[in-house]
Image (cartoon, rainbow, N blue to C red; front, side, top):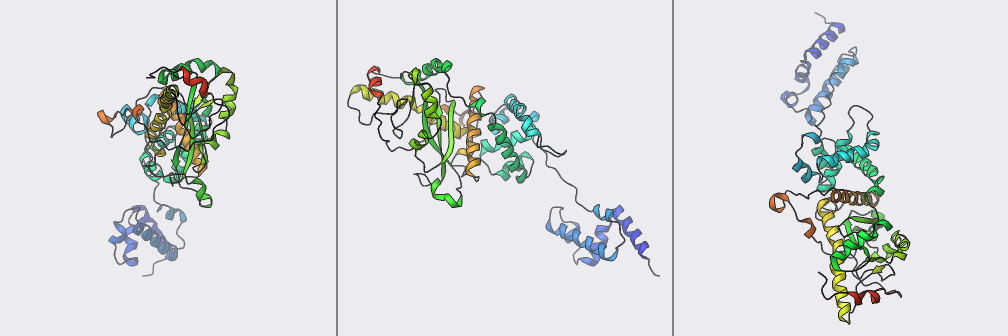
Length: 412
């Protein structure tokens, strides 16, 4: 008895509706039915089987409605997104470095920029975007690892990272502030308590953040320790607040060159009439607003000055240590950053902003592998000095002659 095309089509449609076409077709097509019928939906075998079934239907049943074939598409599966409200406070501090209230404050502040990217119901909420970026900065893990933990794809997280960094950098003037005239008395008092040096408003130094260099200018990013990096210059206050950061120069550039080519000379020039100074190591020149150690002290006063100078300037080393411990993406132990120099610069500035926010909110620094249940005495962490140690050329102006005679015998 002949079977009409309409009858075949009707039978196929009923089989599709009943969900039996999968087994009915694989018999004549594949020698091993179980190869496809029990394969996971994400496997290559399953996708090959579905493609064979579609090809068979298209050839033998040309009158079959396209809408019936569309029913064979795999349904979209969404990973569960992280939820701020369901996490414990301690877990937030360990994983994201901030408590719930601070994260919500950040989300509210950046919401206009983060909400503009949501164009359909499956868009990533601002809260999830913020949490995923904080997790990346704190852990230093690969994008894929952070993306899976946050419930999104690697490509989606890459876009989220760029979006959150740009949103954060728009607020940089609210987080990183150089001392103003009305702040000088407080800042000078805090520094005097460290080493008994008068009129100090900041400690300056450089640190290196490793990155994978561009192929065309690989040598430019190789620093004196023979790895590729960005040379980051920072100024900090006595409480380890970062008051200025410059992350635009490659690792081969000397600290003294960075100092002369950016905004610090201008800002210190504005405060020159107040007779204030920064403290720098021997890699910097001695300027009218920058005090460096005496190379070869010949008097007891010069020795006391060097001792007080080193004790006070040590705060910038502790600042680098705390910054890199809180945000492991900046550490060499986590590997080099696989981003363009421009994005690495954005990451460094964003971490500096978040560091100041954590200090402002007086948040504890917790890590899973720390002593006493995870609490680390981060203020005692001092990383080895990785700035340029070569002595810079002396300037004609030497303010140290007016500073050294006033030191007490002990400075602690």
